[in-house]
Amino acid sequence: MLPQDVSPEPTIFRPSDPARRPGAAAPGAVSAAPSRPCCRGGPPARPSPCWSNGAGRTGLVERDTDGCGVFREPVSIMGRGTVGWRPHDPTYLFISMSQQPIRILFVGGHGRSGSTLVSRALGAAEGAACVGELRYLWTQGVTKNQLCGCSTRFRRCPFWKAVGRAAFGGWRNVDAREMARVHRSVMRIRHAPRHVLPGVSGGFGRDVQTYAETMAKVYRGIAEVSQSPVIVDSSKFPTSALLLRRVPGIELRIVQLVRGPHGVVHSWSRQVHRADKGGRLMATHSPAQTAAEWLAFNAVIESFRLTRTPWTLMRYEDFVDQPREELSRVLEFAGLPSADLPFLGDGTIDLPVDHSVAGNPMRIRTGEVPLRADEEWRTVMGPGRRRMITAFTAPGMLRYGYPLR
Image (cartoon, rainbow, N blue to C red):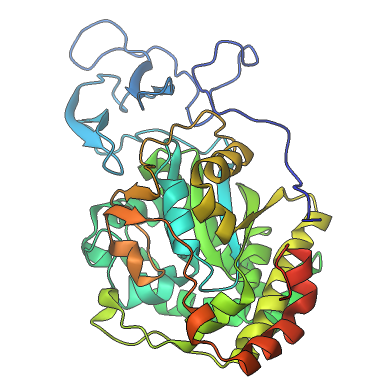
């Protein structure tokens, strides 16, 4: 029997829902500001609904500081059309998300399990934004200025420039090299047991606190710029998920993505050129290392079932076989139960441009992509290696519903 979901109580993000608690501010909206004299001599300006995502999501936006509320420039977020208007006052805050926790849908598991495709599919749904493997933000993004998923260099990408301004007043105001060092310090898999403890001290504890507080600002900036109630982070790494429990102001939900170990081992054995990194080869791992990590990573991610963190399981094979059912289920788990999926076709998915900071080379691919399981390993993997992988990973294969023969 497959592990059962540990799902939260249903929470539907509907800021315009009149049935919400009287007097409560809508999620993702600022509280109504008092009337103020208009700088142009008109009547007092009040907050007014000025954005909608076309699916019933509306929210209150605070007028600019002098109360005039003159909106000029249309704003397009994540390529989804006009959702608001920029005021003449540069100190204006488009929509404050500071009163609500940021919902993070974390895709965890082992690499080469289809996480880039799955996270992009989730991010294509209304109300969600995919940012790829955010754990590489400081190394591949801010420091090395590599390609964003939109095929623009990170520092030139309008989305990430806006996130940097919202979070820090600009990326230049953050010591990216120091954050890369902190990232390396706290992300090592050997530190996973320390992240389970309620508190950490010393230099490692300071690094954990720095990382958590800085990433809280990053997630807040992403939420404000994308205007999406759900952020899809496909960092996968177990310590990334454990660290997110320490990030203030977020609501974490875990999707454990599992792919059969033979396909994962074969994928890590192949030499693949990265179109997003000038044709450089992707890293390769030995079959023994991959099999051991497949067991360990999935065990750590599944351990979230024992905590208060909402958790659900998705098998990659089930996703490509029944994409609509699996995406709808996970989106409902994420708090988007009525999300439309117009981008799904008959065995295909139409991927829009997104802003993934890192991931598989297919993160820069857009348009129609076939949904199919990569079963090449069945024809190229020798019987000896098959038996070795099966013997090594048998406990996990049985747990996640993969046949041993």
